[in-house]
Image (cartoon, rainbow, N blue to C red; front, side, top):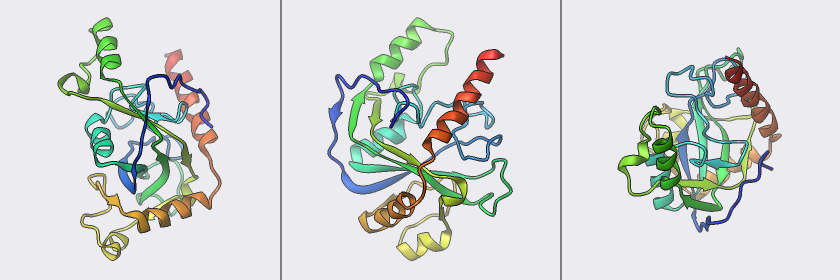
Length: 212
């Protein structure tokens, strides 16, 4: 369950195909959990996506717009959140490419106007990515995130065995077919859902930022 239930007025129901699009997440170096980089440690911004708190991606901030627009256009039902782990834990997972969570897209909304209006009201902000785009889709639906050691490891060998091109790196933009998606989901669903821990961690980061 999301920590904050958003108003779903104006959101459209989404009918996707049984496919899973891989999306890279910049993650924190200061946490054992592979949570999003709320503190701009990777110099990619103070990130609010994926937004565990509201079970959305793209609503709270104008970020990764092209990638989300592509996922919506291609009708993938699932987003698989991946990262190369460089956090606090000295687990054997360190420096491996992990899928630590997923989102099932249930609803979508074009939020371009929302983000452009926010920018117009705060012109000192950096111009949002969506200013030059026709659409800026935000997605909403249930999320599940697991612990570091319970994550699904993606290797070059698995990609080759499953018939996908590319290497297990941040540039990987694989769309997993139904059979392979179901294997990944089954693995993650068999593990304890740790999303409350993810939320608690980023809440601590947000409090620290507010005190600065």
